[in-house]
View (cartoon, rainbow, N blue to C red):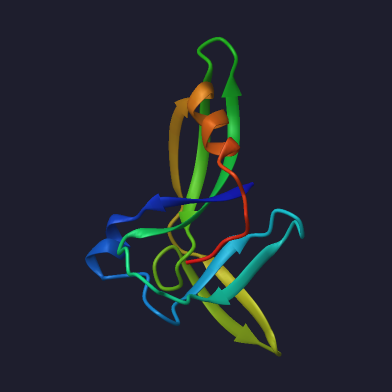
Length: 116
């Protein structure tokens, strides 16, 4: 599991992310999901955190099957507080495929902590 910026057409249409939008990302060091509020300096609508997970790898074709979801609250996840803790439910889970080479390049993008 890892989080990278990707384009979300649903968020682009709704002009997200915006200042104070809730978002959910996978914590590279903490190994659990983190919920926070977006702080926007320059809006770039549609470019949002996406959480990626490999489902399988076909060694014969060198194709990775993955699933991902947009981390913006109200789009890919429903984020809510319960008993003083953040919780979320995945609303839109997308599956896709890409070459192993592209998957490895995506994973190699430096993870410097996520900031919207």
